[in-house]
Length: 132
Image 1 (tube, one colour):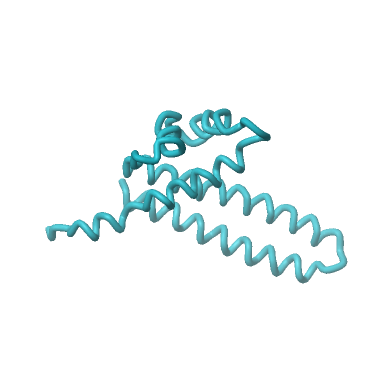
Image 2 (cartoon, one colour):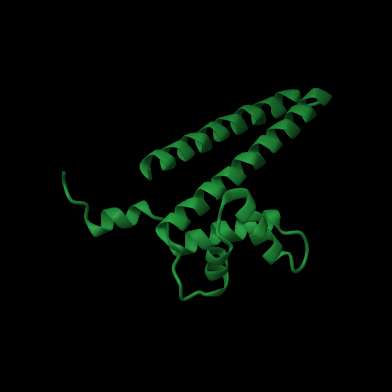
């Protein structure tokens, strides 16, 4: 079995700025109003199993890097949240298409969204397979 170089291993894991960006996006989706960040972090812990302490360190202790396992779980949570969002948008597009006026445009958008959803699903499966 060939040894992997440090650069190869590093490419497998996301950068700290990526992880922080995913975390910020998740927080903005879950938070409700001012001061809802701590509640949102608790909610992310319940929904996706992201430890509150690791989220706190990522958000407020800039000198600490997240563990590779936590970074990968954060990516999985972010992709899962995107998948939920796309599913909701597909349903809204189908409702608009049923109303009538520009059904062809709505159905084109539905097919594009479903293709995107399939791609997200494939990436989730690839990530799970690669890191097992």
